[in-house]
Image (spheres, rainbow over the protein chains, first blue to last red):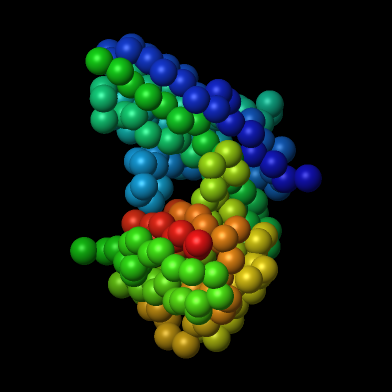
Length: 113
Length: 112
């Protein structure tokens, strides 16, 4: 069964600290993995996309890693800011089928001053 | 500006009163989709459309209808809303073969 699991469900960190969010998936055949940031009450916005051959990709203070062998991805946030408070959703795509996106339930990150 | 718009953004209604949530995109995307988001359950797909006049059920289609008469519009229809349809709804679009979806701002629906 195609599934995407994220951990932790929620996380509270101090401003300026780093944190890492995890995404494990059983989706097959894998096409790509995307991390979205969703501010409260807003639509998700794409942060990074990673294909099978990519191990790491950065977008400013956000760095995503992918281990296609273990089917794990992580999103690392450095020097966190209050504006990083949001939910982070991992979405995995399969190569086949017309409707081929699988969503994790997200990690709720709260950055406190 | 490339965007997906939804209206209304907030709606409070009563059980059984038909309503429509509109969705429009200006990116000429073929694929459009509706999701609902509930606490602890993440985004769940209601219906999707691969192109004009082509629609199909997602994971949670019961109680919803959609239509795709024009490429840019994909309205979500609740013929007889019930309290368990209280949720945050998102419309999204993307180009066929490209996996990045663009999401609308969301519609928070409350059914009493």
